[in-house]
Amino acid sequence: MFGKYKPLWGNKTRLKSSYDAVIIGGGLHGLATAYFLAKEHGMKNVAVIEKNFIGFGGAGRNTAIVRANQRTQINVPLYKEALDLWPVLTRDLDFNLMFNNCGNLNLMHSEAAMNAARMNIATAQFHGVESHLLDAKQVKEMVPALNISPDITYPIHGAMFHPPGGIVRHDAVVWGLAKGAVKLGAEIHQQTEATAINTENGRITGVETSRGKIHSPRVLVSAGGYSAGIINKMLGIKLPISVLTIQAMVTQPLKPILNHVVSSGAYHAYANQTLKGEIATGAHMDPWPNYTTLTTAYYIKHQAQALSEFLPCLRGVKFMRHWGGLADMTPDMAPIMDGNDPIDGFYMNCGWGYFGFKSCSAAGRHLAAFMATGNCPDILEPFNLRRYEKHQLMGETAALVSYTPDN
Amino acid sequence: MSLTLTCPICGKRNGYEFRYGGEDKGPRPAEDGLTPRSWCDYVHMNKCVAGVQKEWWFHRDGCGSWFTTYRNTVTNLEVEAPEAKE
Image 1 (cartoon, each protein chain N blue to C red):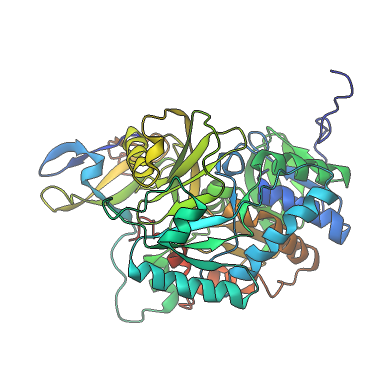
Image 2: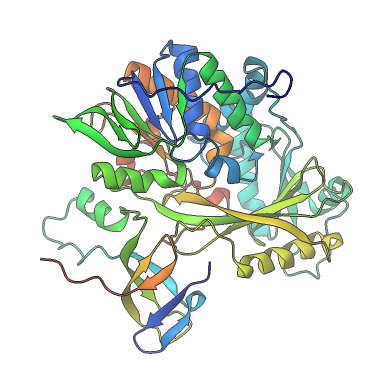
């Protein structure tokens, strides 16, 4: 259209009647899985079907923060791998993902929280993930705009500093993965809604869509917050998930004041300054399940109060935009990645809550291996659905404040 | 989006007065012959309906009663109980 402009992920093509694998959901996890299926397993006859447009859901609504300072031994290696993949993907996809390796600062507001941080740091260091404990004075030296006086609601006692984390441009990841997957042969079908998943004798046989029927021996549901509803509606499988709307907002652009991602469990807020100068902030969820993806005055007010307490220079700054996305919360705050149980050829990737963005590359890569070989990679094994009935919950809750309707 | 709920004792109130109590899953399973799987089903498993569902609520900042109601999870609006089937 203009000069050398070419669509990044090809033109709309006819939907074929058969694929080796169908992925429901054109978000980060679905696109990453398609990309790695083609790249690492040579499975190129793959269709990603997306009801709206790629990046419509959680992929475009998250706050773009990446980190690998999760709480449990099981989760950290997965997130570390995802973090290490950003520079690799930037090169392999030949697409600038704008990885801003600025580091994450988790504020601690009590001695108990400092102790929890010590444990968290020990876990991170055990897995070779850089993480340190800072006292209040060091925190102030690192972010002079922070208020470390004892006169605020939750005085800052110190922080957990995690240098390898930061921000990645989430839309760029969607576009880059889509470009990479299509270049290797996968097809992306937008405006294509899955209406049914077909099975026969306990095996997947295909998917029915708004544009026709597709035969396939493998189907992955990787539709973010919509996964649990789709899986229940189409296959009658209930999941330990509650779907909540999570909210975020950005202020007007400001001069540089914040060089790190700053987060606080006690204030229930996180903030970082985007490359455009806006302060991106969020953390809040509606305390009851809903699919509205709308924001509420209640939380915009809360966010303004919290931010202007620990970052008082933001008083009077205006919020420019706000938005909501869906978070599919599990009781142990860890995702569900499973396959071939109870239906052969059926794979699911859901329950990421608000951790779905930072992990998409590693999760997609291992799911691709799972789908290509039929064998669950060791790293994904603990994330199976049956862990809930075996009482093998992960206790990832401590990574952030617990926020599900179950507590 | 804001939510209002109708408490059977206090009437229609702001949703933030209430605590969500989960999807209505019918009666608690009997202790006899209870398996980890059926208990897990009852405790953790949800249908995650995008549409009207029957659910439990607790009037935390009011009279303290538990009650069930129907709500459309897509619009976040309380709705009339659907006509009994069968």
